[in-house]
Structure formats: C-alpha cells, structure tokens
Image: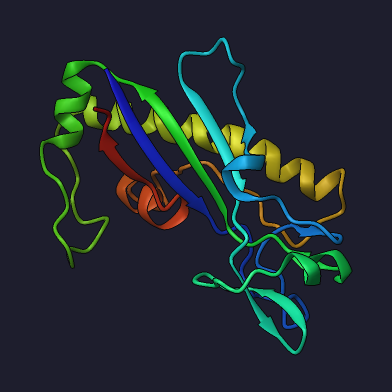
Length: 186
C-alpha cells in the first residue's frame, strides 16, 4: 500500500542578526516549483522522494523578497536581481507501507489544537513506520542541504539532524522539524 507524505524543511533559524535568508540563494534565477523538482531517490527505488522550491515572492522596493504567502513573483525582476532567496524546501515522499503500518498510522489522528508530542503510541508498527520514514527523509534531504552548505558555500543553512528520542518525541520531530503531513493514496 502507498502512503503519500508531504513535508516542508525550514533550513535556517535567525540566530544571527546579519543572516536574512530563509533558504538557499540563487543568482538571477529561481527554480520554478515542481517543474524544477529534484529527485532524491533513484528511479528504480520503490519509495520516491522529491523536493522543490516555490517562487513565493513579494515585490519590495523593486526587489523580490521571499514570503511564505507571497504571490507577486515577477520574472523580469528575477532576471535583474543578483541575490534571490529560494525560501522553504518543499517535498513529497511516496512511502510503501503494510496494512498493519497504515492502520497504526491512521488509528488515532491528531485533532486540531491538540499539542504534539504528548501522544506516545503503544503500537510498535507506528513507531517503526515513523522511524523508517523520518530516517529516509532526513538522510536524503540532509545530504542535499549538506551539499549546498559545503560545495556551494551556503553556510547559513542548518543541517537537518536525525530524530533523537532523548530530545523529542517522534510526533514532535515529524510536526516541528519535518512539518510532515500524510494522506491516503487513492
């Protein structure tokens, strides 16, 4: 069975006053959403992970500035602007799960307003599935971010650290670090 997952990686925090970037920087060009998506898995793999950046921009003083709900992208400004912020990294994974794993994930959905991290599932399938999925996403996306940091000099991007059960629950990692959402594949 297939379980479709969507995630968003916020690759910077504003710990330093001099860093204003939200994501990776580009020069006079920005990737165009899913059209320029990057596959982080081999085509032969059963579970696929893709990532992309969206052109969510506002025009401010004649320049494009990334904003989560921006809708003012202008390709003419993009061609003239030297430094363009790519923003948040979006992604999807098609996970292959068993019937028991899917049942465990769907057993107790979170309600709106419920605090994440308080629920500690008793189901071993839930924890095993969550661990396997988060590890795969973290390793693949982490490699991409590391490549941007080291090979392309984008040092302000933070490493995507693996889940550590001593620091946070699996639910908290999925909701706050990966911003992970799932839905049934039709």
